[in-house]
Length: 267
Image (tube, rainbow, N blue to C red; front, side):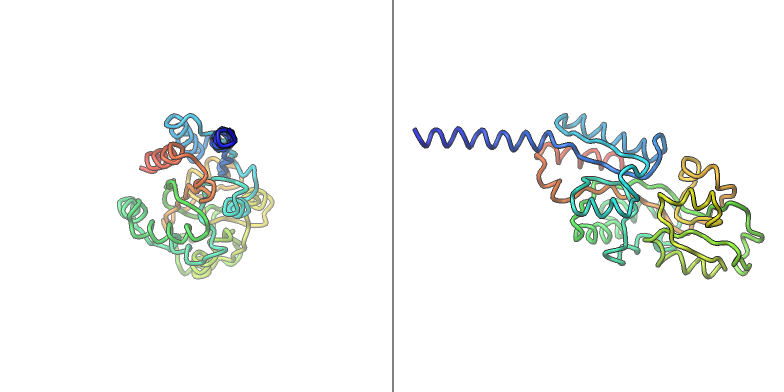
């Protein structure tokens, strides 16, 4: 009788654990505004994943609601936030800056080959992210980057022009790869987080920014940014990441749904 009771208790315990995992609300952060291309992409991913496995419970926090992306990146590594779409931070491994190297790819065809699963760039970065307790579910390809200005510099296309009166914002993880280029073209630079950038542009703390693509400007900086220069010096990618421990606790159908949805929206 005692063994029967133990078996019943064990069964209830397993059911409770399974239902707790199924009911866990996954917190999903990204830094773009509602209605932006990235936000639509995130919404599509979530809808597909839940369609494939209705037990998934995902809440999206757009527009840096949970904090600046560098801060939230740390939280995803720790597991207090479960998922994020982000340019990977170089804070813990500077080799990740490889994905941001200037002119790593020169057109969309090269970008697709390099950053699709199995591509040389994808595999290098994915392996480095795994060591940070992060797992890649997909990639949002934002396109080629450029420079945004609150006012137009003279001789903007002249590589030897002096632009020392212009202070350009560089994001923290992009210092190693973008500051040298801006220095070469005669700009001053300073590091500012994404969540503080609008105010910095609006108040004149900086005169411009690097680390954005046209749709970022349209949805986030249309007011202060008056001039856009399409430089194509790097290809902007935001990686859809999940904490590995969180992923490991999901049911097999939930894991499969996330992987399938991630592959589809990436393609």
